[in-house]
Image (cartoon, rainbow, N blue to C red):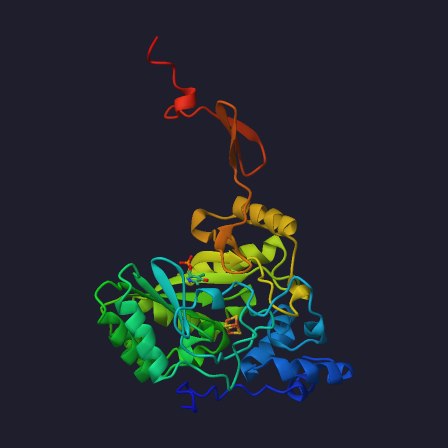
Amino acid sequence: MDARGGRAIMSAALTRPEDFIGAGLADPRDRAALAAVAARYSAAMSPRLAALARAHPQIARQYAPDARELTVLPQERADPIGDDAHSPVAGLVHRYPDRVLLKIVSACPVYCRFCFRRESVGAGRGAMDGEAIAAALDYLRGNEQVWEVILTGGDPFVLSPRRLAALASDISSIPHIKILRLHTRAPMASPELVTREFIAALQSTRLAVYVAVHANHPAEFDAPAKAALAQLADAGVGLVSQSVLLRGVNDDVETLEALMRAFVEARVKPYYLHHPDLAPGTGHFRLSLDEGRALYAALCARVSGLARPAYVLDIPGGAGKIPVAESALRREGDTWRARDAAGRAHDYADPADAAGKPDSRD
Ligand SMILES: *Cc1c(COP(=O)(O)O)cnc(C)c1O
Ligand code: SF4
């Protein structure tokens, strides 16, 4: 266990620019720029991920530091989705009435180069201490509309099983809270964190437990990752997915389709496909909304509802998540126009719509 109470990420062999250069995952000519990147943002990659990254540039791009991270666009901001504006107590974000985020740890097993919280996550940054957790629990006790607590960070899977069980027990002592959700990249990034003890801690609570698994490319589903997901599914944990739409990683329909099928095959229900947030130095990953909409429509035309995530944008500044997809149904005068997956238009006369009803006074 490290000083922040998290489990040491023993296999994070690559952390310094020199490590990535030595592994062939960064360009030696970028040494000076990479030193500047390293001064701002943590980096970490296990030997397993480094091997995957050498075989799949789409994995290397997600984790290996890149000189382009020094290019900050005017629209980019340190707190892209406005966490700070909705933080009544330190570490807790309450944007939607029925659910809160607890940023319980700041460390992750990897540091995604496109991370929306890249200015606040990182090795050696503070986690919530006992006092902060007590203040968060007090807040939850006093806010009866809160139904769900989401552990995030950082990656809550770096918590020791003992700390997770203690936290779950504290949260479950608040009667109006019914759901515990954990947002994690660990099954893909550090599957060795999914131990029997960690799963036992997830099962130790009366709360319904869901895990939202972050993965962006089908090649992340290697044997250890699939085994970790199977253990979670077998343990009765509800599994949903989160992915970020990323240029150079998953910006073609074949890759998105394979990614969503990989989730479903691993018993993970595709949940969100995020349009990248305006985090500093992430412009090289960003598609336009038009490009994203076209890709998402093509994905939806290929896969069943079981494999379809919602494509969402977090409105910069803290107004929340909204669907990005163009609506397939729009009103046209007294009727509705419905567009099918092939783009053909159909009329839908709504029998329950007042505008379409014969006037009963006649
Ligand atoms: C994304 C987010 C959640 C979770 O939202 P869901 O739509 O329930 O997945 C909760 N709180 C905050 C502040 C968020 O940004
Ligand atoms: S695992 Fe999540 S919180 Fe951690 S760096 Fe990646 S995107 Fe950010």
